[in-house]
Length: 150
Image 1 (cartoon, rainbow, N blue to C red):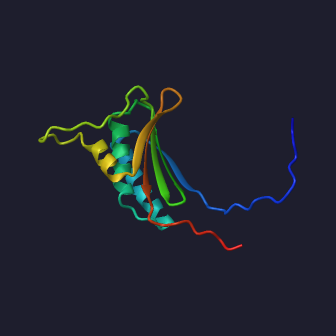
Image 2 (image 1 turned 90 degrees about the vertical axis):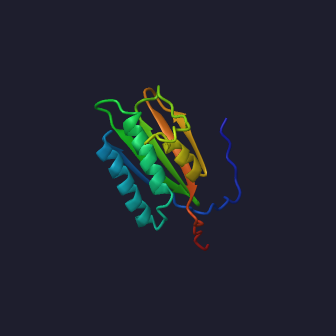
Image 3 (image 1 turned 135 degrees about the vertical axis):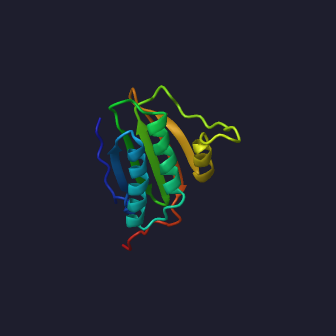
């Protein structure tokens, strides 16, 4: 049953949602481009690149190292809501979920997720439609949304 409700409509402050999405090749070059283009986009938005640049670099490197399937790309998505930047990297290896582990002291790799965990305010993994998964991280932008006067 449809009902009509009359009365004043509440005014919601318009807070813009900024987003940036790219599909990149699952190669070391694609991972480097993810970091470089994310940094440039953050600069365009007037947001600090640290620590987001490092988080993008680690998540993209993991996508091309551990989430790579030959012939399939990965996706980088950045969006800002209020004072939170969300970084998402989606790859096509949903069967391989990331798990932070302590690397051996002399190991040259294996610390990426520990770095993400240390730099991000929150992070996690979301299974996608098979065969995908999305690894995400959120960081504060240090800025508050500007609400236009009425």
